[in-house]
Amino acid sequence: MAASPKAETRGFETEAKQLLHLMIHSLYSNKEIFLRELISNASDAIDKLRFESLSSAEMLGEDTEFQVQVDCDKDANTITISDNGIGMNKKEVISNLGTIAKSGTAQFLESLTGDQQKDSQLIGQFGVGFYSSFIVADEVEVITRKAGTKTKKAILWRSKGESDYSIEDTTKETRGTTVILHLKAEEKEFSENFRVNSVIKKYADHISVPVKMEKASSPSEESEDSQGEVEYETINDANALWTRQRNKIKKAEHEEFYKHITHDFEGPLDWSHNKVEGKLEYTSLLYIPKRAPYDLWNRDAARGLKLYVQRVFIMDDAEQFLPLYLRFVKGVIDSNDISLNVSREILQKDPVVDSMRNALTKRALDLLLKMRTKKKELYNEFWEQFGQALKEGPAEDFANKEKIAKLLQFTTTESKNSKQEEGLDEYLERRKDDQDKIYYIVGESLKAAKTSPHLEIFRKKGIEVILLHDRIDEWLMGHLNEYDGKKFQDITRGELDLGKLDEGDDKKNQEKKEKKFVDLISRIKALLGERVKDVRLTHRLTDSPACLAIDDNDMGMQMRKIMEASGQSVPESKPIFEINPDHPLVVKLDGEADEELFEDIVAVLLGQANLGDGGELDDPSEFSAKLNKLLLKIN
Ligand code: ADP
Image (cartoon, rainbow, N blue to C red; front, side, top):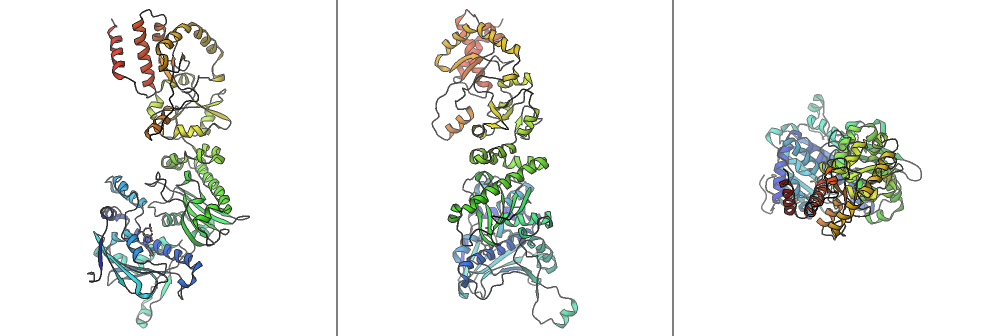
């Protein structure tokens, strides 16, 4: 169809073009989803109008029966989806349909791999919405009239989904939006009533608005009354899913409903549906997605639940009902206690919302806990996607610290692979009889943590140590002091005290050695001076000659790097140099008469200790020079 002369043609942005192209190709194997997206939009538009009409009833006029209508036309090869919802004015059409690029599109496009299967999941996550029409259509027309505006104020938007779209004024008798898809020749199936009927039923059963299609008439009726009015029938259940009885809802229905509210491509990992009665009355339906969204780390990204009050849609992304660290939870909340004309500002101050938030937070944590106890494989999947966000929990939500700690997963020295699948309860179950602490180490990477010399004594004594290496870990541990009455202990901090785990003989032996090496320690201290905070004998090592420890209150290396990288000033702190009295090099060092040799060995030991913890050398060339000098002394 050629655009009429008064039509204005506008281009999509470059990124939008790219996205459209990719989407059409990647989603081809799932092409029916355009129906879900368009019906979802129509139902959202009706929800919005229903909400607006609470304060301005005149917007509805006489047309008070909300509905979505789907018409198939085999001869014209079209499918048309119409709603009597809120509609759009010109400005809204341009900004809603002319802009595909949401924040982060460029970044999103970069993350595509070229692998169709993977990319289609990514695109699904990104939310393809209205543009999925172009998977099956080679031209799309949208005729829309905003509720409360005049017949002549309607807008016609048209595009072939290539590089541009046209927009012009038109007339429309009724309010709302009609989307006409001119199907590609090979997509004829979507112009057939019976085919579309079954697809829509699947996508629309849980939507509270009736979706109507032409009634399939029997051949006899057709011949008798072929000129008569077309009869429509409602083809979906038209009951909001969350209002139904919990045990009557099937898994497939949850999957569809979840996709409807999130625009996700895949179903959810797990969910929790609850009706609360008593002082507060509300229904909540919380979903845990399968995959982290591309913008999980964007603090400004929209998050939160879809809020309904007495089954009337109020707003999307009501973020007041869950804390930030649970931002990945999706779902619906339908309250009987919140006022219908609530705003975001009011929500923020409402004590009812506060108590709901507390209850919903618990509900979400309980859902995760149940998943962890009963469906460990699923929980491992969850952890891989969202564990990092959950680790923000202990700092943000003091009241639920213990509960969140129960959900944390780590790699430990007992792990069979590099996955974070061990919890604190499992750690405590396996602990030694006399062990009263939870031991952990924070490294630059899993490998650095795993190979740290600090682990030597723990390996020897068979004590499990948690290996932390995520960016957030040191910060997390700063907020976790104990779990189940056991204190956390960073094994690189302070003087190692294994408590009762150190047998009597070891203790006595250590004291003997302290005496024996008093002079050596003072000599090294004098040599290193200000370069270290202290020099002392270590009991952490069995194989390595030396290591570095951090003083109890000093900042760890990981935190230091994060702060430096973000341009913050970091208070200076020096390491404690610990030497292993059982190592032949240290024994040789004791009483070494050649001062130069002594200095070189100490310098090399200090350098090694630094490297052992994934640190960097102050002066690598000096280190190599000294090492070479020592090597040359080998006969
Ligand atoms: P999303 O629905 O994820 O926001 P879409 O691309 O599907 O993305 O739609 C973009 C916007 O266009 C919607 O947010 C809505 O504001 C508007 N829109 C789409 N379809 C309709 C409709 N049938 N009625 C009114 N507005 C609509």
